[in-house]
Length: 150
Image 1: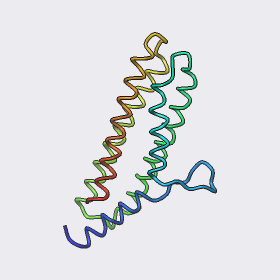
Image 2: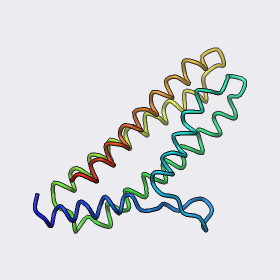
Image 3: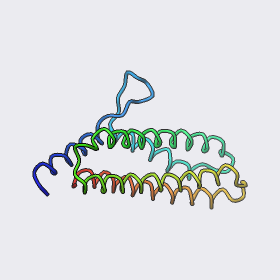
Image 4: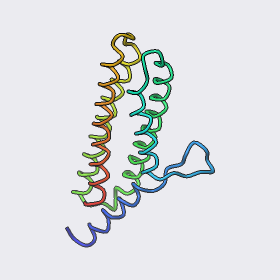
């Protein structure tokens, strides 16, 4: 990798790690804080009982919305830096974001199953949701690792 490509990849990594605006426009949170917030909400879903289903679904929906905003922010950063990136950096960044989006879609499917599932199936459904969140988390880590090593 040339020095220029290394600098471009480092620039993309920095850009992807830039603060994302929090819901309160006066406060900014880092990408790590966003990830921790989403992870906490996603992991908490499995702790809810079937009787607390509405609360669990609301918390999961909010976390999914936050995750969507973070993915959109990363996609925008990629578009804004596209011209400065090498071909291989572009391919890697696109692949990592595609993997993250696909994992997010699978998580959305599990969320849908939680919404329509019966109370008697809650444990199984929340376990599947938790597994899907693990896939998102792994894809997110790979995207972050790829941005810092390309």
